[in-house]
Length: 256
Ligand SMILES: *[C@@H]1O[C@H](CO)[C@@H](O)[C@H](O)[C@H]1NC(C)=O
Ligand SMILES: *[C@@H]1O[C@H](CO)[C@@H](O)[C@H](O)[C@H]1NC(C)=O
Ligand SMILES: *[C@@H]1O[C@H](CO)[C@@H](O)[C@H](O)[C@H]1NC(C)=O
Ligand SMILES: [Zn+2]
Image (cartoon, rainbow, N blue to C red):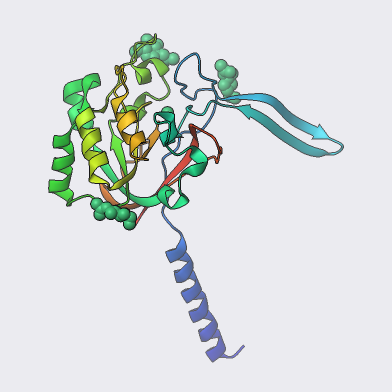
């Protein structure tokens, strides 16, 4: 090859390498793996289990496969509006464009370190976020970080109790109204087992969001501190269980 062609080839390789570098997207996984540690709501819920496991040599080749069983509301999952509202969308009805949208993150870990399990997301927290970062964009998926993901692998700590007396942070009724009335949010995600506080009896946040065709993302894995307050896209794809009240969901965040 001539010196000139060699130079051209080197240049081409450089350009291709550059393009390739640019196209490797930074992706943050916000999904807990499904395994036999996966948190389930209570003893009436179908835990995640393999119901059949095959793994071994067969006719000279390796062959492995499983069947699995899981409740709709186990692990990192999406609540469809129908979960708490008779006329709400079921999982299969949620328009796909609502599952890929701008993200925003409210970090309440400081508040939790002062107020503990009784912490709620309040209107003042939403107003404070807007003061710091500007008004929320329309068509947003909002994530709320209570710092609860660190308890995931201990169900007692995560649910706040050994028995059915659940106790963990959640969203206040007033904040739920504020979010719903703004008309800006497709869905609300939390790093706890429920958008309502664990101690709730009336599930106000669930009811308010459902009536406004908003979905919930629950048991979101918020362990990556590089997730910014805004400036990222959320991709939240539930299994398309047509009539589902909820479904396991894969959630990714992609910083701008
Ligand atoms: C959970 O899965 C791990 C890894 O497969 C296994 O070692 C463990 O025995 C399982 N625990 C239960 C309670 O099934
Ligand atoms: C948000 O966007 C939707 C869809 O484009 C529109 O119908 C709605 O009026 C907008 N709401 C606000 C508060 O801008
Ligand atoms: C979970 O946390 C509780 C309360 O601190 C503790 O008593 C228990 O031993 C922990 N369980 C495991 C499996 O670590
Ligand atoms: Zn749920």
